[in-house]
Length: 261
Length: 258
Image (cartoon, rainbow over all chains, first blue to last red; front, side, top):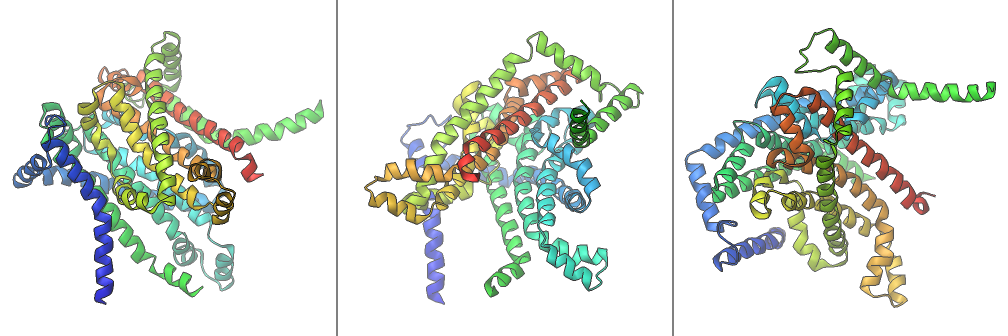
């Protein structure tokens, strides 16, 4: 048991070392005055700025706004995207109608819609959430579509042969079988949600961590800018990690099935 | 003559079925705008948008910013490919490289790198270089991941065979690993290209210049038809690049799929 723990700790240390090396390089470059501290503030200066921001709670308020926008966008994307993808996979008519529309909008860089939404809905709020919804929608629809299409026919036939009504078939057979694909789509959508939220906040907004980064960059408070960048990057990393943990928990039956096979 | 008609009619039918939702959306758009249900500031008629598109093409307003954006996208992709593909290969071939880069990729890949736009503007200036470097940073990860995936798919017996015939590690990478990784690399490119366009346009919307900057300017002057025309151009850029990539993929991988 303690040997297993030791190995886990050793593995974590081995994984952390390259990141620490990069941090040490950063500190070395700044303290040896290779880089202008105006261009690259030292690790210490950034930590100080982070402490300031945490003390005044600004960073948490703005981070909260960004998380709320990204979260609202992602949840709406799932609520719209999963049913839409499933309907497209199950109905030829829906596929024929939505398929070309999705293909046509797939290649549009979604952040380009932000100026348009500003025209429609004004600065911030709905504009940012809507841009996030549209961005997260597409990967979820596409992965749900392929997931539902990939459900083995035999599952569906056996359930039907046992007299399963369509609603139960969808809930008990099709959605669980498509779940791994749907969750892959959700993970991609999560990354997009953060990107578009920050992009929207930087392009036009009064709140959010993107706005904070932009303001500090504009006013030359670079150690504060770096502190804000590091905050959002680590938040996104933790969110991705939590989603992976949740995915592993939700799909724990799948691993077991594979072990038995 | 009748035979030709017989052959053309179903093809035209299929083509119509493939695009009818788009036609429907455009017709509804035009009707709603013409009927005055939505103010033209918010939704100008589609026909006026197309007219404006032709206007910016013929008066030459479109091409300088479009060329700037495409240049930044292409240059960033090139740097990302030149750096990312070897790193991805070496991560599979060398344990040291893998030990060093694997945690960095795990940290960097999901990170919202657009947050670095002001940082890159500070480091590399407001013009081309900052945008190119940002595109390189956002697209290097799909290149690394797809190259690593491709390199892992190489049967170890092929590497042994090459080594037994006296190939150096460098030759193995170029002549065995690279060709075998082409399918994975093409998939990576299909992720990297839209990401590159998104990065370029967004960075331009924040820091100015290029098509992204032109779009934001048009919105600030409330020139709605121009906003929609530029959006149409961006959509077409993404679409054409994706179609071309699929075509190239088909050509490059003929030996693979055939």
